[in-house]
Image (cartoon, rainbow, N blue to C red; front, top):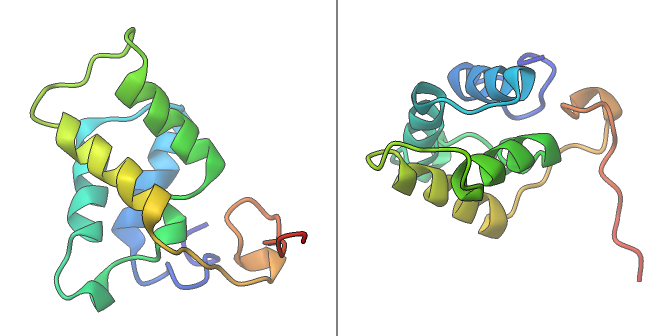
Length: 113
């Protein structure tokens, strides 16, 4: 799946971290730290594309881990979870309209006016 992701193929570690969490349907501090480090890299041009964090299935897992009281995050990692959520919510993330480049196989649709 990493190589099929347009714009994210150069960011194998970030792709693997997202894949691991989506596959297991749970977060872990190692993958969250990998993503945090990837998305806070300097210069910004070396960062993975924002839409990698904006997958609905990934966001659902991250939101649940960060805000559901039955999930306990180690205090040292909590700011990283929140940073990733904030970045995903505010960064502009565009992906190719070609279905094969989408991680879910769906194409991005234009907003309806």
